[in-house]
Image (cartoon, rainbow, N blue to C red; front, side):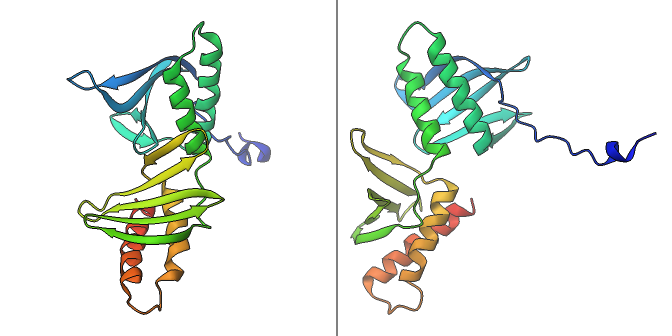
Length: 208
């Protein structure tokens, strides 16, 4: 028999990386011994060893489960960041690779807000369309490869130089909504046509 209270119980949300333990962080190298742009975190979740991939160029964190690759959720990223901090505090050396991954985790957890993106200039550089602008007081340039359709962000932050990476789904969504009013119902000038191409690329990335 089940009581009414049993029937009304709602299972708590599963957080697979809550309490995870990071064993090691290693950069992946190619056949020539050069850094491939990817890090791998070997973690222990419960009694299982789980490998997490950090793709530096896109800012994505991925885990392979049952032969399926999926991106980590925001709550999982937060739990992984806590685990990585515990790892850093436990090792008797300054692990620079772990520091890079932790920076990537923070950027994934707290992405750049582009809902207030304001373009300063739009340039046609042949293969590349460059939209230079600002968001939240920071310089943010949007780069679109017109051949591959690849959308990238150039983020300039004080003391950290400039980093180029693919926008997150949320960033692309914000960018799409920030730029769309600048092209809808506007005369088809060269600037508007270029922005329209970028708006469409952001829309595709947001629905990726």
